[in-house]
Length: 199
Image (cartoon, rainbow, N blue to C red; front, side, top):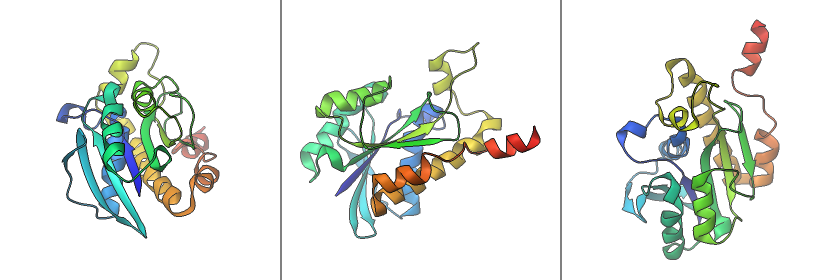
């Protein structure tokens, strides 16, 4: 079994924010593969289905971002998985908007949700799909930037990046993390080529 975990915050006011990229990717993935029956479980919203020949769970912790590890650890206790069966999906300000970065492990990189998962599991040996959201303008703070609704002029790029992350998840499940890294880590940022063409 594989467990996809999207990081975010529960509640309507956070739904379309940059910090909820992980939730949005999980929802799009579940829609794409017709995985229904979302229910409250493991301190989050959980659903389970088949993708190809694999049993796949999709979890969105409802503990709020900084305590995400509590939900993940509970899921690990009850599901037939180990840490290496987890694929964590989350936003990353250190990554340019419109880009993805896939890794088989590593540290939290300053992301408190990832830090909580590492601390709760006692391991960092799980795959990550980082969704680039970029840094706020100099006049704005990180919290306001991450927790405000995505601006109308940024929505197309953001949701295209979410869809690209869903494709990356499919690649990880079907062909492994190494292939996904080769395929997606070197791609230019979505919209970058168009912007360069206008220059």
